[in-house]
Amino acid sequence: MSTPWGQHEAAVERLKASYAAIPLGAPVRLAKRTTNLFRARSASDAPGLDVSGLTGVIAVDPEARTADVQGMCTYEDLVDATLPHGLIPYVVPQLRTITLGGAVTGLGIESTSFRNGLPHESVLEMDVFTGAGEVVTTKPGEDLFDTFPNSYGSLGYATRLKIKLEKVPGYVALRHVRFDDAEVMAKTISAIAESQEYDGQQVHGLDGVAFAPGEYYLTLARFTDQAGPTSDYHSGQAVFFKSIQQRTTDMLTTYDYLWRWDTDWFWCSGAFGAQNPRIRRFWPERFRRSDVYMKLLGLDRRFDIADRLDRRAGRPLRERVVQDIEVPVENIGAFLEWFDAEIGMRPVWLCPLVAGRAWPSYPLRPGKVYVNAGFWGTVHVGPEAVDAPKNRAIEAKVHDLDGHKSLYSEAFYDEATFNELYDGVNLARVKAIFDPGNRMTNLYDKVVRRR
Image (cartoon, rainbow, N blue to C red):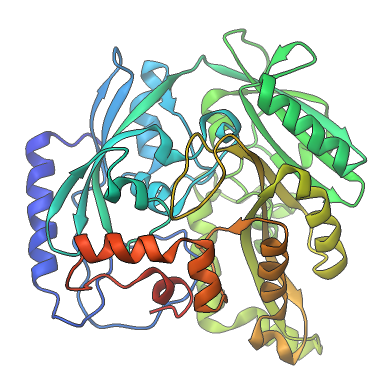
């Protein structure tokens, strides 16, 4: 959706007015219908921030390969505006309704992250609506900009971001390479991250899936102008993640490659029967989307459907284990071995990343290869599920392996450990400058205490 500059400025004024209407002491939250967060929050009757006019692309400059984008613009709408010019953002997170502002403040990731880092690393400048009720323009190297990634709204919300764009052709050739040994896979990831090649061919995108102990795949993506027969994992019967085990090569349009995971929410659509051929045949194409599955999940939570069925069948109580973690590449084998033994959930998504510089709120070592492991589901644990033993064990193990975990889902760290991992001292210092009245909920209260 195109948003002229005048409309953007008017939308910012409405945002400011909605902020002024929130009573002092009431939580400051976005008034938006969709979310990609997996943590509950305390109920509130206070009005939210009006961001309804901040959902578009303001301008695309094909020559400079930049775009000015509103903070609540989804990547789906952003790609729709840039791809006709043969351009895409440096990193396009897997799910269509992730917003640009959300990916920057909450750390998005995807298969280009091994060479392009995280979404905030291709931001040239941004306007942030702060807890002081002001819009501050900030650039890399400044306190607000550098501390903003992984702050999750505790410093404020991006209203506009100027980002770099990458030139891409029309197709993506895929190669699925199987490994029986996680250590060999890790060494291969390191080699590809250094050379951006494999077997003499360029690698533009790199991710993978651990299906079972001894069954690991890396998917190597090569952007190409050479057309060929392409697979359809959106409207047809085929499911992308299953194809990784079934074929060694594949070809997608660039558009379909960007959203290859969204159609089945990785593999999580299976919980709703969407991968059953008899159901899939009649499942409308427009409903094969992560945001639709998220709404179905919300209904399950609201009416306690899964737990009711478990109780009726005499199954132990489930613990929800929905997390993304990062560990140094040399530790991914140790993590997967432990995860198999202690959690037992498969598949696990694997996505290498390399940060170009240090970012205080999510301290990754610059130039160091990490691997993101994503796992999303439930584990039957019994009455102790309410204490989240599996999630707590994951946090401890990731800490032991010199890693971090993303904060879009539930977190259980004690405050001292949390501040150690996410540089709480620096975050508090910057928050005191840009939110002196402490209007925005601080990061620990937001993600652990769920306030």
